[in-house]
Structures are given as structure tokens and as C-alpha cells.
Length: 442
Image (cartoon, rainbow, N blue to C red; front, side, top):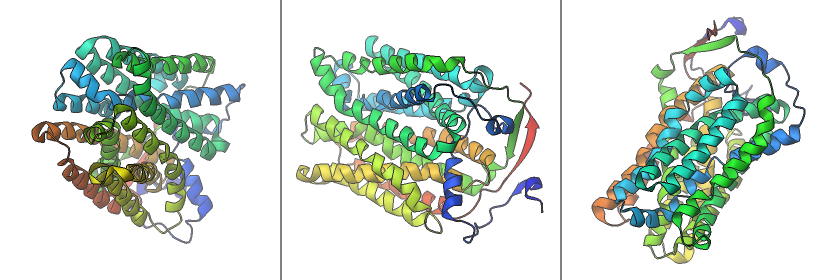
């Protein structure tokens, strides 16, 4: 059968003889799907970037802003709750809403990019992100929740667009640029987790000013991104329709693994400092522990995909890194504080690897870039929606029990679910779908 005419995508086993390291590396680069469209002409036509250094700087600054709005809240959550009279359940909802918006608003990104162009959308969404940060800092309880929703929605859209721009404009350096992108994400999260409490203390012991400070890097990124808005990219006349994804068990296993590991990640972002404060740490100390845990994610997030593609499948790697994550979580929750930094580092190494593997599975379970784009949308859309339940459940359990010890049950159940889903998703199979070229009738 001619490969170009093959539309039926059965879940055949990958041929170990053909799964060489270079081929796996090429598959990993296909993760960076152009969010503007699956347009063959646009992908084949090289784009002249007249000032690549300025584009690179803009991409780094934008990526740095994709986590501070999420990780800056956690060290101040107890203070914000006391100031505004929030219950633990309401605090859990506050940490849940941005994560929920990541899933709900991510599908808008390709639509907006096709209509206005990815560069213009990134600029506009950076400004809405800045508006959300200001809104949650300056307008009481209503503004706190509304701003969190706006910030989460903004991050959800940009998070889909940015990898596509990397793939399009740095196609030959996509692997290296992915590392730079991941590094910027981790650094942004770590800076916000570690610096927000000292900033709030320096700014008159005001949690609002501490949270509001992060509007500055968002606006700075918008300024450096402005030159990219003038770049013109061709209209997209071709799209691909992928059928059968929602009926495929393997696709749902990939989605569940993405959602459950993300749930643990956002529990850590939203609640780990509060848990550590409850164990006797100061807010500054708790924020630094979270920051350190996030920084070490850089190491495992870069190494895990490379190591995972060296074997015949990813099942063993998934089990190992999830056990590392659970070990770090239980250590932070129950172990003596003398060894806290060791448990935090173990947690960071595990979570960095689980996130990278979740993204890698999207590529390895897809036959081509068009299937990968749709599987990515499904895994992130449904997955982040599922992930949002974790932080909310932590708040409810804390409200009901008045303490943190019962959270071990949540960690254990979510982690066990991730292992079960990951064992299914880690098999060397393709999702069983079909794809066909259609005209884009915009």
C-alpha cells in the first residue's frame, strides 16, 4: 500500500528494527505543532526571520510568563485567605480555576491564530494576562477570582501557540529551542514561587502588591514581542480532519495520564507552601522549597524523553518517575523536616519527568503531525480539565478534616491512577484513527 494513500490508522506495534534513535528524535520534534494550522505549504515554505535574536528573546520572555501567575499565588495563599476571609474550599477553587481554564481555552488558540495570525494573538493575550494579574490584585475577592480566570485563560491560549512558532521559525533547531522553552517555563515558575513573599514584604507587607508585581514581566514581554506582529505569514487553505480519536482507548489512556500527572503538579503549585507552613515553615521558607523543587524539574524534563525513547516502550519509565513523584510528595507531607530539601528535590525530578513523558507520549502514539496535533488538543483540553479537580479536592479535604494528613489518600489515588493509565499509554502502539485533507472554509 502506498503510504501517502493510507488513511486507516490502526494501532499496530512499532517495529523495533526501524525505531532508531534518529527517528525517535525526529518524532519528538513533531511535538511542536504549528498552532496556526496543519498547512503543508506553510510548513514547507521557509520563513525569513530578519532578526532571529529578537524573536528568540521574545519567545524566552513570553515563556517566562506562562507560570508566574500560577506559582506566585501558592506562597501567599494562607495570607490571601485570611485577608479576604476565604475558606479552604474557596482557596482550593482559587487554585483550581486557572488550571481549569488551561483546558477550556486551549482549543481557542488555533481558531484565533487562523483568524488573526499567531503573532498578533500572542501580543493580545499577553495584554489580557497582564490585565488578569492586575485584576486579581486590586479588586478584592471578586477581582481575585475573575483575574485568576482571565490569567488562566490567557496562559492556556499562549501555551498552545508558542511551540508552534518555535517549530515554524526555528525548524532546524527545534530540539534545542524546545530545551530553551522548557528552561524558561521552569525558571518563570521558580522565580515567582521564591520571590513573591520577599517582594510582598518589601512592598509594605502587601500580598496584593506582591502578586501584582508579575504584571511587570508580562508587559516587558509584550514590548519585546511587538516587532513580531509585523511579520506576515500566508493564509491557510488546507486543514486535516482526524476521525475516531474520541473512540480510541489508547487516546483516552494518554489523556488520563496527562490529566492525572498534571493534577499532582498543580496540587504542588497551589498547596505545597500551605502544607509546609502548616508543618512549621515560614511563608518565605515554604516558597523557597517550592522554588527549588521547580528548578530541578529542568534536569529531568530534558533527560526523561531522551532516556524513555531508548527502550522498546515507555511503561517502565512512567512507573519509575511516578513513584519518584509520590515519594517526594509523601516525604514533604509526613517525613521529618530535617530531610525536607531532599524530598523536595526528589519531587521536582519526578514531576519534571512525568510532564515531559506526557508530552512525549502524544508524539510517539501518533502516526503523523496531524494526528499528533489533534491528540495534543484532546490530551490537554480534557486533561487539564481533569487536573483542575485535584487542587479543589485538597481544599475540600482540608476544610473537612482541619489538617493536612488526609491528603496522602488523594496523592496515592491520583498517583495510582496515573500509573495505571501510563502503563496503557506507554505501550508501543499508535492511536487508531484516520485522517484526511479537507479545504479550510474560513
